[in-house]
Amino acid sequence: MSAIDFPLAICGAGPVAQTLALLLCQQGVAPGSIVLFDAKTSAQAEQDARSIALSYGSRQILHSANAWPIKATSIRQIHVSRRGHFGRSLIDSGDYHIPALGYVARYGDIIAPLQQAIKHSGIRIKRPATVTALDEFDEKVALSLQDGSKITAGIVVQAEGGNFADQTQKVRSHDYRQTAILSRITVSQAIAQRAYERFTEQGPLALLPQEDGYALVWCVSPAMAEQLLTLDDTSFKQALQVAFGERLGRILTTSPRHAYPLGLNAQAHATRRTVTIGNAAQTLHPVAGQGLNLGLRDAKILATILPNCLTPSLRQDLSNDHISAQLQLFLQQRQTDRQATIRLTDTMARIFASAPDGALTQSALGLGLGLLDIVKPAKKILAEQMIFGWRS
Image (tube, rainbow, N blue to C red; front, side, top):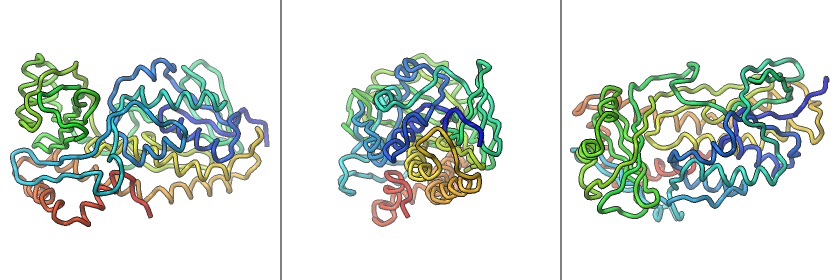
């Protein structure tokens, strides 16, 4: 076949993309055969202060990529409740014999050790560099960059998904007509290492322990989001206090607020020489905090399959049929976990995005929360799906 620049190109250099590259090297893929492209500079990525929820299973994946420890706050308990109604459940890491259910970290603190590991590995990252088009041929894929240059690769992994509002609609798509309000708060009676998922008639409200306070993810209607964004801090704290209640005492401080629209946009996709993972394959509602965790599980499985398609040299001498079969195998191996996670988050989001308070669906979910602490096997299945994903 004709010469190519790289056997493998990865579009995006977020946590999922960098984890994939590092795990591939551990599987024997030569670092020089991998290149990543990212629109952000290294400094921009490490300065990103967004709060991210990582499951314990994701910690294991990052540890295997030599990108742990990170600066993070442990979650040992998750308190799940429904505002103003009967029904609550407490998920505790001790019941599953693990040190934590998950962790809360700033995006920049997740990406920093990954970038350090990438630097030491010899894998190349081209940044700032935006891939504007992919043209697939029989023996290669041509990547067009924003600066007008072109690079060819044997296989391309698309790991740059962006936000729901900016994405092209995929096969499975749904606008929840909700907006997430993000902030950081402090309270008068914090409970160490306990997270809260509170279901309201507007949508789920999550408080995730982080450093000396909590990361807030408050899902509401777009109209209410506009109102909340215009409130002064005192009025916003009062509104949040009413929605969340007094479990953590008084809300003392709040940081500047940010907002983004919420939707489901998912399509497991692979061609003869390209495949999507992470946010590029599935963008989820944040109700169960599964977005990045699902993407890291994508990276873990793909890292066991791609070495069968990559040679140590800068030649890609395997047939289209072989590569296509391996990428389809990846889709098959990820199908159950992806579908289970999408179904879980989509069901929960739809109930609280569209069903009015007092509706039968909301009442049924409230009853289900109460039964979770009684029906231990059901609680275990839910907890393990959130911690590790579906494991066949």
